[in-house]
Amino acid sequence: MNITVGVLALQGAFAEHIHLLTQATKHLPQGLTWHFVEVRTPDQLAECDALILPGGESTTMSLVAARSGMLEPLRQFVKVHRRPTWGTCAGLILLAESANRTKKGGQDLIGGLDVRVNRNHFGRQTESFTADLDLPFLSGSSASKTEVDTGTKPFRSVFIRAPIVERVLPHQPGAQDSESRISDTVVAPSRQPAAEDAAAQKAVAAQVEVMARLPGRATGLETGQTAREAGEEGDIVAVRQGNVFGTSFHPELTGDERIHVWWLKRVGEMVAERRGAV
Image: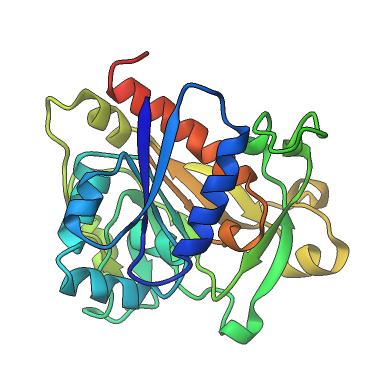
């Protein structure tokens, strides 16, 4: 089975994602043929089974997407056709249904995740940092022949002017209109899948899952403890809802392909289900 994964290449760290995607295929089961492409046009997007929105500058990405005629095709891809999509940092902001610390008219969202994100939660770029994260969902997604279970190994994560998920929102048909009444907050427009698209309807009915939290910054930077070891909940920095996955941090800048391995396995499962192969 051939699967094409696109990386939105309007701005940001798209080349780094493609490098780690290529590395990740070495650790995937046989029987699938993967193609990784840079996506800049609606025609290129239409060829994709799955998509990554990379880290970068979310306002710039949305402006370029709007001017190049990509914004609406992206909403159709994520929210109507419900294709597997992963957003990192700026990509997470674009995939949120609500984003605060944003002037109205200054940021267009794609949507797909019923969350409110707090943009630039940690401050300016000079306040960027790295921290070890405990990511139990990686269990069984070993990208090392010498480790039985890499889910037990902390994931060294890069946070650059990173957002966090400030609130998980209740799922509702249509736009999150109550969010638009909050000062300096923008919401994504509503887009609904076709009633006869069973795979898309299944994805849209899913609830938000919290996949990772960041403990206090002192914990992450000074002691090297993970959230589990510290016994803290901490800020939400990774979420999944149906076909959409989002991370506050930049796995593409670490050289560690474990999250890419995990995500590609999920992509393979979703594409096979949609094609009726399982």
